[in-house]
Length: 357
Image (cartoon, rainbow, N blue to C red):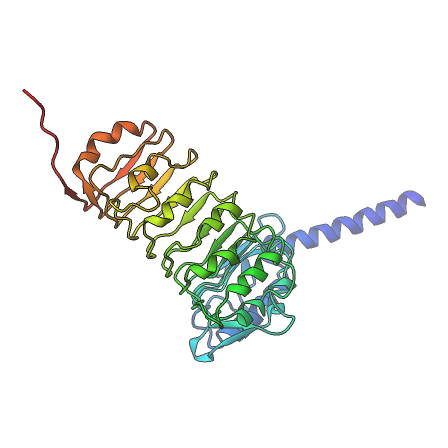
């Protein structure tokens, strides 16, 4: 009798497992397919952009912008850039819309008209597995709009993109918002703030992001005043993009403090090389690059006569569209690890020294 009961239970378990896996092999889970169709109906009710998100196509793992886990068949990545119908106007998001996606790891809502989130319905309600969040090209233009989407702890988030979101300075700016965010995003490693309207007042608000490995502040209005606070608080920083701001040579004396830095982009700034700030010349900076630095970009800048690069670790050097002293070519030997040198469209100036007969 006991053997019959055990056999019946084993058969029931097997049938249940087969039924579950047959559903997964066919496509994504039903609850997630239904949830995705609801998302589609709200962000693009006319169905043009997400035309393959239809009820008669049950395998939502094959839909545009969807990536599923190969084993569980659950949605792990949802990419909806430009997917929301612009005729719907501003979007105040109810993030619970994504709750059926219980193992979501990456969410892309680029250029969807997002301006904030409903009260207590921010991204913190999502899966604890969320690692990447791209909100770029939306309109988070003040503290309230940012924090409405980050009401609680999102300690699992590793990457946040707020580039080109109209963030700016002033009393209605987002400096305090970033400071609050740093207390809620304890494990954030990648932060993109490029293409906004930040000035130097932003630097103190970034010091709480102590886990950052990559920071993009390119295409803002930064001059470098007060930047030294970054060097003293972001000791884990490996990649720093400061390109196309209005930095001058006063930034140089603070960069060597970033001892973990591997990639540095200073392209498009006013690094004239001939300027002396507190006794430090461009030449001296280039001779004291962080020993960990592997990639340096100085595109669209102006290097002075006498500029000398000296680094035993630098592997990539990008000097495209640069006013470059011709004597630089004599100093390549000081870069023994160099594998990539880019000097496209360079303007060489100066004269080579003549050899005595």
